[in-house]
Amino acid sequence: MSKTGNALGSRTLDNLAPAGQRVLLRADLNVPMQDGAVSDATRLTRLAPTIRELSAKGAKVIICSHFDRPKGKPVPAMSLRPIAASLAGVLDMPVAFADDCIGPVAQNAIAAMQNGDVLVLENTRFHAGEEANDPAFIGALASLADIYVNDAFSAAHRAHASTEGVAHHLPAYAGRLMQAELNALDTALGTPARPVAAIVAGSKVSTKLDLLSNLVGRVDILVIGGAMANTFLAALGHDVGKSLQERDLHETARDILKTAQGKGCEIILPVDLVCASVFAANPPTMIVGVDAIPPDMMALDVGPATVAALIARLPEIKTIIWNGPLGAFETKPFDAGTNQLAAAIADATRAGTIISVGGGGDTVSALKQAGVEHDVSYLSSAGGAFLEWMEGKILPGVEAISAGMSNIG
Ligand code: ADP
Ligand code: MG
Image 1: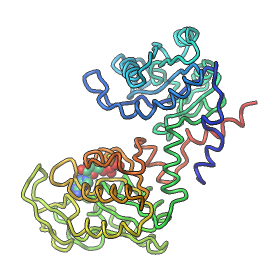
Image 2: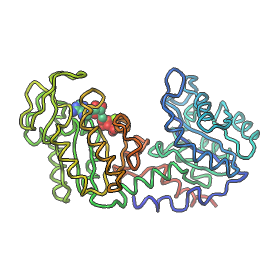
Image 3: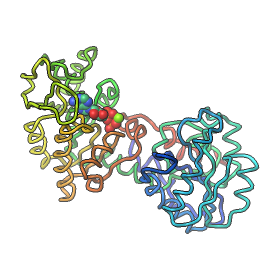
Image 4: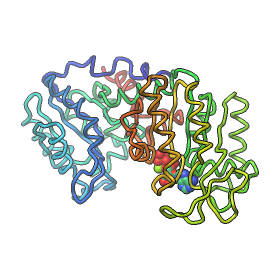
């Protein structure tokens, strides 16, 4: 993919006059719930500007989204109704709800809307046509509106009816959150200020193979941490004891190192590690060099010398992308390496010497836990879509916004 600015082109809300129009807004209302209530409203807060803007401009804002995995049939526990109520609280304005996302129920609810009103339609995945990207279902959704706005970047890696299919049947635009995500990703990897570094860590090499392969060709420095680093260290002949590693990927790890060398990408592996005999909170720990991991212990975090070396490199780095915690951050004290590096990156970001972009489910949790979620340039809430973009894959939901128009007369 080229520059994402070009990918969206003029398909942003800047070029949309939605007054009096029915706008089908694909949002991501798939928020974490606990005991029937929204436990983390971050996604709703991030979505609010798009809804407010459309409403203020006089659109009838018809929101659709998936929630969870009902597998094509109605599952009451996966209704969007409680989330619509939560959204009303976030927006501080009334939000109506329709018990179906297509057909007479949706049509009647839309017919009752005034300009500026907001309506949430029931879970799109209550219909099998959603995930199948089925033409009849796409037609039923498209018939509800005059314009389509997609603000669900986090669902853009899926070619479903509401994320992709509908874009070919209505004039399609990106919402403000989608636009912000794409701008941030483009700044980080499309046209970054160099040198650009990536931190790729987390538990497994196997889940990040495409990511590593893409990044070695695009970044100047690649830091490998977390349990993934154990696989690389073992592949280089170090004894990693009982550490989590993937023995069948040693050859792959060596290939990645070789490719990096050929492309002039510097790889940074840990030089020391924090080890324990048991994986539990606050066990006795030992800091060892990578050549001295005791056979009955496991590495659960990068050590202080590694963190200090990484922090020492920050002044020369202009852009940094972070996916994957450096250690088993959910269990103390194995969050220390992640926390210290996060604090240093936050300082550099505040000082304006670095652009920092983070993403990934556990990475978001880890950076929140480190207290820096508001101190990095951009923290992507997009999960799988963020990773696929970083892997260099084309996201069907993004493609369809620009491609879709050519299919409309
Ligand atoms: P993300 O969701 O941000 O893409 P991953 O899922 O790849 O990140 O990796 C996060 C997981 O990696 C966390 O659960 C963390 O505990 C684990 N992890 C990191 N380092 C280690 C380690 N040294 N040993 C065991 N688990 C680790
Ligand atoms: Mg994860």
